Length: 260
Image 1: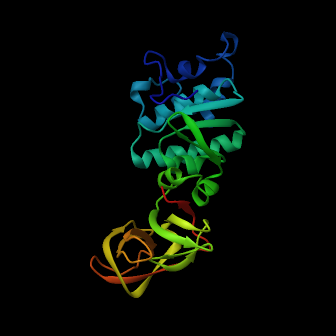
Image 2: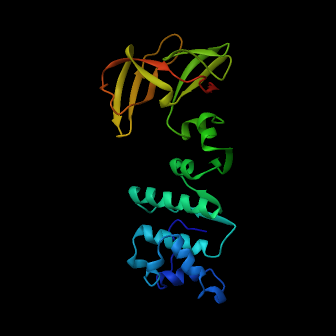
Image 3: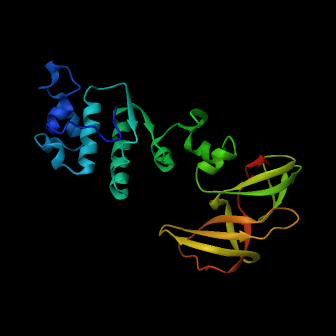
C-alpha cells in the first residue's frame, strides 16, 4: 500500500524504509536496490526522508510498496500532498512504471483527471456505493445517471422536450437518447461549435493555452429552457464577453435523462 501521507519512518534512511516490508533475510540483498532503481532513487539510499523533496519521498513510499513484489498495489490518494506541476510529473512516472511491471493497482482519488489518466477501469462511488464501472471513455460518453454526468467531465444540462427521439434545443433540433417526454440533455463542450450569428450571448471566456472554454448563455423559448452552455474552442478564438453567437451541435446523439 502507498499511503496518502507516504508514512515514511523519519528515523530510518531511504534504504531502511524500503527494506522495512521485506523478510529480514532479504533486507541486505538486491531487492532494495532494485526497487530504488525502478523509481530513480538508487543514489539516495543513505539519505534521510526529511532531506528529500516531496516528489522524492513519494517515490520512496512507492519503492517500499514495490519491494515485496506484490500482486496488487493499493494507492490511497498518493499525489494529494504534491504541488500541481510535481503531481503531474510523478503521476506520469508511476503510470509508466505500473504498466512496465504489470502490477494490478487500485487507485483511490477524488481527482477525476487522475482517475481517467491512470485507470483502465474506473468505478464512481456515491454515498458508499459503486454507481458505475466502465472505461474512462465509457463513463464520459455514457454516464449511468444525471449525477454521474455532472460529476464526470465538463458539461451542461439543458431541459427540453423529446418526441420521437429528437428534441428542440439551443443548438436546434437534435437526436437524443430518450424517445419522448421532458428530458435533461447533456451537452459536452466539444460537441458544440460557435456560429457567427445567433441570439445566444457569450458570458465568459477562459483561456488555457491549448484551448479556450467559452461560456454561452442561451435564452429560454417554448421548446427548451435557457441556460449556460460550455463550448470548447480553439485557442485562437476571438469571441469576447457580450458577443452574440449561434450554436450548432456536432455530435450524433446527445445523452439525455428523464427530467427529474
